[in-house]
Image (tube, rainbow, N blue to C red; front, side, top):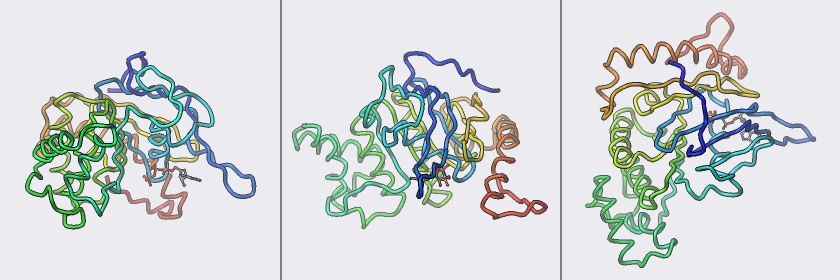
Length: 283
Ligand SMILES: Nc1ncnc2c1ncn2[C@@H]1O[C@H](COP(=O)(O)OP(=O)(O)OP(=O)(O)O)[C@@H](O)[C@H]1O
């Protein structure tokens, strides 16, 4: 079940020995991520899962060009990454909606900044609002929306720019369980249209398996590293609420959780959250 790790020039993302450290006070350094190789194919949906604080966001930020690796190189579609990753659309846990702009203005703004005429940008934004099921909300302001509706606007805001790569960091983190399922299905529907490359950070193993072609597991930090790379051979199209009842899903979950469990316990032990004898972890 472990995936092939061979990298090719057409990869959307290619991390070659990427290590990340942070400078701390008094000249100390924190080595967050040990030298890491990772390839994401041009049309692959890849999830990164790992215990809290292991370096998932750090690795994603290096891929976005927000962090410079201490060692190693990042390539995006075969080109060395220097500065911000302009091929990527980035979706954070916190959305990036501007409260003084209406929903349609928030969606259109990316195209307008890229030089598209306002009327054309609005027309495209209206199309995207229809696709995310929010056409009736075009003239509302973000603060008039539910958390799930805001996420839909955030998706439209990113996808309207047609990035070849999506970098997603716990994008559905703050949502309730049902809304997460619905957002996952919406994401998969939109993704299936042209299968952009996706690097998706989550702490939710169910979500990772249900969405992805591959699930990458990271060890507890410091000097976190990739300890597993699992192919997810579940058929597509997938409906997230249904796929969880598939026996293959359960087999995959059991296998990956076995690899992840000790790392999750190790991470909690580091923060003193569990004792040696009473380690209790929910998957
Ligand atoms: N700017 C920084 N300076 C110092 N240490 C940092 C900095 N940013 C992150 N770290 C540390 O690097 C490690 C990895 O952090 P990161 O946010 O990538 O973890 P994560 O796996 O995304 O965690 P979570 O699942 O809790 O969001 C953590 O120990 C964190 O404290």
